[in-house]
Length: 107
Image (cartoon, rainbow, N blue to C red; front, top):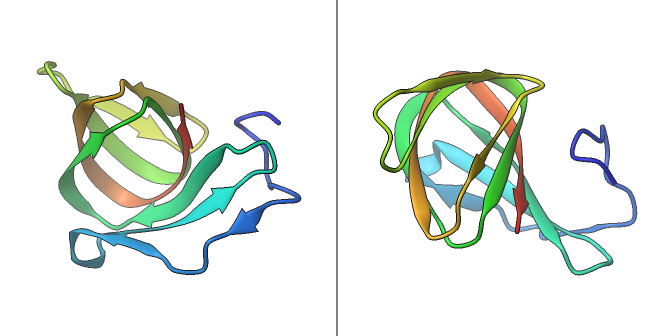
């Protein structure tokens, strides 16, 4: 399975949504037969800060954002078809310019 897959087959989806920042970020957890998990979600226009436990790859599937990783001063722009990596036990700031659809790959 590639990170740019257009769909995920043979998976389980947790029905209850993960809702953060008063509804500005909503996602669903997808569980794969091999034990891995991903979240599929949307972030509405806002500037937010997320913390990470495990390393993450954020695949942008729609919209536009700017991100700033912990310890950096420069913002980086991302749009549909692009991705960025965040180390584990870290944080990042995200400014969503246009409602963002994403897949978060963990580990």
